[in-house]
Length: 462
Image (spheres, rainbow, N blue to C red):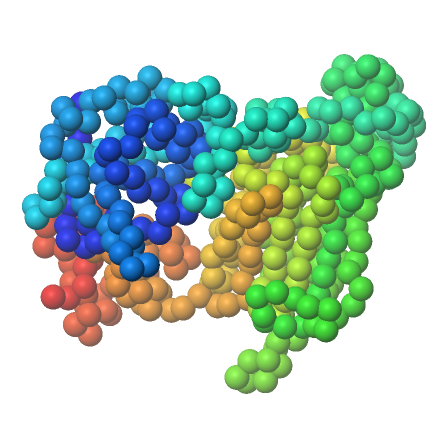
């Protein structure tokens, strides 16, 4: 049974004002269901999205007008739903909701699509991928392989590299690893058992982990570049570049530690202008370590681009090649786990003092440390072929300001939500801030009888 939900004037206006883009699409109910499956497949093969069915668009003198002309009832939408559910059954990946409004005609069918681990085809048997507001067919073998890599169905770390096996079996890196971890085994025998040598060729994972110079075999796609821009602008320029970008090479293990140390040294040399004069530029080293480790271990090694660490006057950016893999999205990245390079993640954890000591918890650790230091929450942005993490050199606003800003856009706030937003761990301290705001006549306890005790929330004073 599909739920029917009555929406407010504000919610209706937001839907009618939606900009069609990578994540949203609006369609008339007259469009053939089979054609609409292209949009649903494209969303599923990209990062997910929302389709609103029952909105007619008309251009009048260059101005786009939208009209709510929905289905007369649920039965009228049956032909659409039957086609959709054959290809996109109700599940965690797809949900269907009818939207109604007291002053509008009929029901809008809202279809919400989550990023899907599998490759999804439209009813014509073609795979589509969303790009901006277009559904682009994925037809060539190369494009399908690219999609498999993006979705984590296959991993480039399993590909072999055309170099002799002694590139990894006769290296200082592998001998040091074997001496510390498995002193009774021979490198070649052990690497073969781990499927890191296939058809007498080393895999990308073995080259990155156990070669002294992976960059000789994987040029332009296996190193790290560090930049220092003396600006707060959105982009750095040649004029604001403080020095020639620094290159970090070597095995994945060494890259992590060397990149963290180099970034730390660059940051410590920096000064930023504040109201009180020049101050040191500081960032939590542990958070930098976790974010850089995440970039090295989860990047897409099939893309010919290095990891870029860019230090600005007000932030650090870490850009890792490759989109987020599998079902991971910007919104669920702290809760969900998916290793694009599973062998690298597993095996680097066997090294002495592994960089990923808490496997799967790296970004959570980074976010928690930054919150404890009262710095603004890092921002994660998924670009077309990379993921950018931005660590801002900005102190979080006072807890009371954070609470008020949250309530400007949300009806209520719970103690746990306030703790998460402010980085304050103590529920009692947050409670103190709530009561201070209450004394100033700004907020009040939610009068809803169901919001009592542990469920109590605060709302803006009416």
